[in-house]
Image (cartoon, rainbow, N blue to C red; front, side):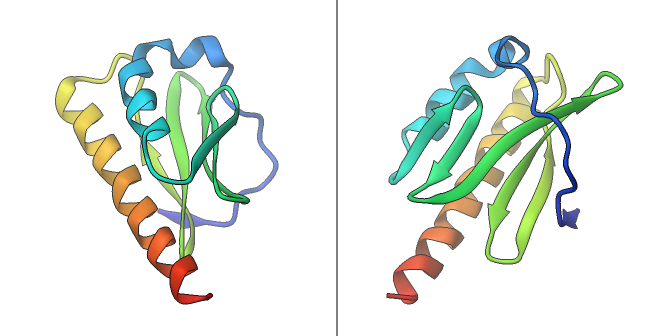
Amino acid sequence: MWHSSAAMGHTKPEMLADIAAELAAVRGLEGIKERSPGVFYYKSIAFLHFHDKNGKRWADVKSPRGYREVAIEFQADARARRKFVQSVTDAHALLSKETKAAR
Protein backbone atom coordinates (compact mmCIF):
# COMPACT_ATOMS: atom_id res chain seq x y z
CA MET A 1 0.00 0.00 0.00
CA TRP A 2 1.31 3.49 -0.89
CA HIS A 3 0.44 6.37 1.34
CA SER A 4 1.35 9.75 2.63
CA SER A 5 2.15 9.16 6.28
CA ALA A 6 0.04 10.97 8.83
CA ALA A 7 1.68 11.68 12.16
CA MET A 8 2.09 8.41 14.04
CA GLY A 9 4.60 7.33 16.64
CA HIS A 10 7.43 5.01 15.73
CA THR A 11 7.92 1.54 17.17
CA LYS A 12 10.07 1.53 20.29
CA PRO A 13 13.58 0.12 19.77
CA GLU A 14 13.00 -2.83 22.11
CA MET A 15 10.08 -3.88 19.90
CA LEU A 16 12.54 -4.43 17.02
CA ALA A 17 14.75 -6.98 18.80
CA ASP A 18 13.16 -9.92 16.97
CA ILE A 19 14.33 -8.54 13.59
CA ALA A 20 17.90 -7.68 14.62
CA ALA A 21 19.45 -9.72 11.78
CA GLU A 22 17.22 -8.05 9.20
CA LEU A 23 18.12 -4.61 10.54
CA ALA A 24 21.80 -5.54 10.31
CA ALA A 25 21.24 -6.29 6.61
CA VAL A 26 19.63 -2.86 6.15
CA ARG A 27 22.59 -1.19 7.87
CA GLY A 28 24.85 -2.82 5.27
CA LEU A 29 23.16 -1.11 2.32
CA GLU A 30 25.20 1.61 0.62
CA GLY A 31 24.43 5.13 1.86
CA ILE A 32 22.23 3.98 4.75
CA LYS A 33 22.62 5.56 8.19
CA GLU A 34 20.59 4.69 11.27
CA ARG A 35 19.99 8.10 12.87
CA SER A 36 18.12 6.62 15.81
CA PRO A 37 17.19 3.01 16.59
CA GLY A 38 14.98 1.71 13.79
CA VAL A 39 14.99 4.99 11.83
CA PHE A 40 17.10 4.79 8.67
CA TYR A 41 18.11 7.41 6.14
CA TYR A 42 19.49 7.05 2.65
CA LYS A 43 21.87 9.99 2.43
CA SER A 44 19.60 12.82 3.67
CA ILE A 45 16.31 11.11 2.72
CA ALA A 46 14.17 9.43 5.39
CA PHE A 47 14.14 5.85 4.08
CA LEU A 48 12.79 3.34 6.61
CA HIS A 49 11.04 3.43 9.97
CA PHE A 50 8.61 1.24 11.88
CA HIS A 51 5.15 1.57 13.37
CA ASP A 52 3.01 -0.72 15.47
CA LYS A 53 -0.60 -0.61 16.50
CA ASN A 54 -2.98 -3.17 17.98
CA GLY A 55 -0.32 -5.89 17.97
CA LYS A 56 0.64 -5.35 14.31
CA ARG A 57 3.96 -3.98 13.07
CA TRP A 58 4.91 -2.60 9.70
CA ALA A 59 7.65 -0.56 8.11
CA ASP A 60 7.25 2.54 6.02
CA VAL A 61 9.79 2.23 3.21
CA LYS A 62 10.60 5.16 0.92
CA SER A 63 10.66 4.69 -2.79
CA PRO A 64 10.35 7.10 -5.69
CA ARG A 65 6.52 7.09 -5.43
CA GLY A 66 6.33 7.82 -1.70
CA TYR A 67 6.18 5.56 1.32
CA ARG A 68 5.05 1.98 1.05
CA GLU A 69 3.88 -0.10 3.99
CA VAL A 70 5.73 -3.39 4.32
CA ALA A 71 4.40 -5.81 6.90
CA ILE A 72 6.89 -7.32 9.32
CA GLU A 73 4.83 -8.93 12.05
CA PHE A 74 6.22 -9.56 15.49
CA GLN A 75 7.97 -12.96 15.55
CA ALA A 76 7.68 -13.21 11.76
CA ASP A 77 8.74 -16.50 10.19
CA ALA A 78 11.84 -16.85 8.03
CA ARG A 79 9.92 -16.44 4.77
CA ALA A 80 8.35 -13.15 5.93
CA ARG A 81 11.74 -11.90 7.10
CA ARG A 82 13.32 -12.67 3.72
CA LYS A 83 10.44 -10.93 1.96
CA PHE A 84 10.88 -7.88 4.18
CA VAL A 85 14.62 -7.64 3.47
CA GLN A 86 13.99 -8.08 -0.26
CA SER A 87 11.35 -5.32 -0.24
CA VAL A 88 13.72 -2.94 1.54
CA THR A 89 16.62 -3.86 -0.76
CA ASP A 90 14.46 -3.30 -3.85
CA ALA A 91 13.28 0.10 -2.59
CA HIS A 92 16.89 1.05 -1.81
CA ALA A 93 17.96 0.15 -5.34
CA LEU A 94 15.17 2.25 -6.87
CA LEU A 95 15.88 5.23 -4.65
CA SER A 96 19.61 4.96 -5.29
CA LYS A 97 19.04 4.84 -9.04
CA GLU A 98 16.67 7.82 -8.91
CA THR A 99 19.03 9.98 -6.85
CA LYS A 100 21.99 9.17 -9.12
CA ALA A 101 19.93 10.05 -12.21
CA ALA A 102 18.93 13.38 -10.65
CA ARG A 103 22.55 14.56 -10.42
